[in-house]
Image (cartoon, rainbow, N blue to C red; front, side, top):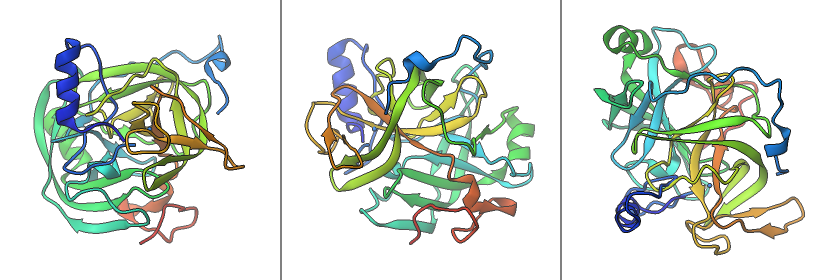
Length: 292
């Protein structure tokens, strides 16, 4: 996970506002972040989509986005995606899965230029965990159609396909109103940070030097415009498997540390767990998210 927001702001002040993060955290938040992929970028890659701030949101301590699934309907309640470690009630414990928790959290909805144009409000935490992945999904009081009609903003669509190494991506932070451009460097069998372990995480190439406050930012495939991951952590100090210093663990248990490299958690598994009306169904066929 990334450094707490207060620490991030202090670091930015010292650096003259040049640096930036991957995640901001609440009270006691932990933050979280294979084969080299840069060389895999194809000269015949599809033309890049225009990736803007439209549909992203700012939270009190993190970033996020209004998301929909390939089978979502316009009149379904709109959902907001951010990190599990951005949950307002604190980090979920290892092994903990939260569903249906009451929430009235607010989100600043941004337009394409990054200006706040509305406040959305949650009705509940649909799903939150820091086990295997690092996600919180909120249900809001508005439908996609209402948001589109009132503010002209479309939700970002989650891809239901595994991301590909070498893919050009943008990490779009609603908190900092800043975009990071890089590529998927590869995938991590297990990413361990403190007491938490994440599976099949995305490692960025070094250009995505995300900072605290960018936690929960959507990671957008620039060719399709779809969300393929959610930004969550990075190794800040070169330490081994500690909070703010995740380590990579391969299938044989070998540990690798990449100081200064940041990570995200894939989101392609999420759509299979939601049915008609954006209703969570952890027992649905193909749903592999951790269960309570």
